[in-house]
Length: 203
Image 1 (tube, helix red, strand yellow):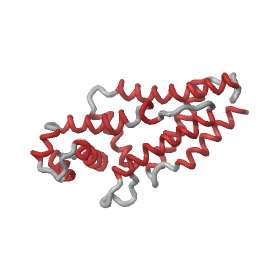
Image 2 (cartoon, one colour):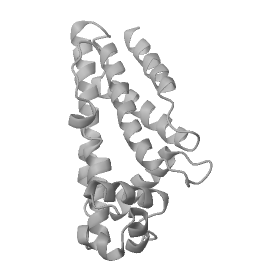
Image 3 (cartoon, rainbow, N blue to C red):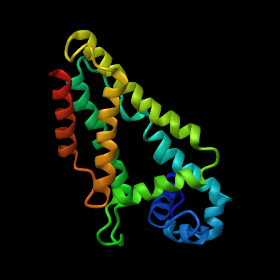
Image 4 (cartoon, rainbow, N blue to C red):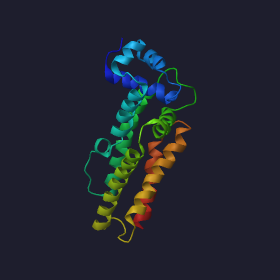
């Protein structure tokens, strides 16, 4: 029997991602955890409390730039490589939790994760500012790397820093969303797209 709070969160993540908040009853989640409903309630008396705990761990904490991109760099080129490594590490953790034997054929763990993200906007109380803060963190790390590259002469000095950061961010999110409907994000292709944008900034 599972008695670890972290394991409860991991199993609840799978249920919320594969179903949705409204359909995922405490009974269903308890079953996935190998607990009785009373056993689950010991950890989280209310479904919303459990949902918030899952999202705090697997969305807001996991995608915080302080946790996801803890590295130093001396160039935009190096930043790109290390940024993608951070994405790979995060994907590995999420896929290891979301991928299980009875998953619906044809759906990647990435697809289920996007399903979860849509629920965050719907069901997590007063979440808009938290989402905006998460997005802004990522824009900030890109803008810092791009500004450093401009100052050092690595890329053109006349570039708009915010617009340049936008290109990289949207390349990631567009590709990640599109490929979630297939087999999941191809990080090698992502590197190719980033390198193409980088070449445009240098020319």
